[in-house]
Length: 233
Ligand code: ADE
Image 1: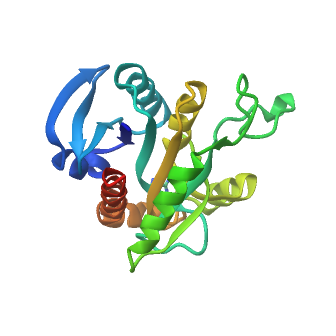
Image 2: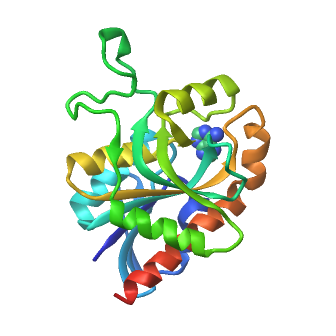
Image 3: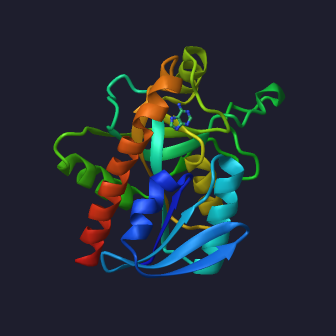
């Protein structure tokens, strides 16, 4: 089983690269792909850059070049569910592109033409494992639900509430659904694991720079525990 792991920023994945045994670095389309074993499991890890296009370039290249069996997007997100505290974990059941909008033509908001749906389902088995492992870390709470992605940092209550009510989403970020889109069209299973760095609200511009780094550590920690679990299978 080979895992592909994508983060948008170095702070979301560098700790994983550091744990890799005999990493081989391949640079394609300005992205450095690190391949090797982490906790005995075959992995390829990459920092995609922020936003949906960067994430799509990275995911498509990873699939064609490294042929992972499954891709996981890890990192931080703004919390939309009132249940979240900073550092808690969101595991996606499905992802949605909240800024995809052809509703003036009669489509539902978020509708992806071609694929002809709004929600892209995550791999249930792996998502359940992510949730279980996250919940085993005592001091944080893990919640599953829809994660919404778009090319915007959400920092206003109006945008937050629109995304929350349009899609019943629990968290907002900028890459997960793009990776999910690429994986879906390539028939590669995927999952999204995000630690909450802010509330995607009026306080987000203050909270994000304060908490992103420490929150990201939680998603890396869970990812490492998950890889350890798979190394024993
Ligand atoms: N990633 C972390 N916080 C976010 C937010 N508020 N909006 C979009 N992406 C984020």
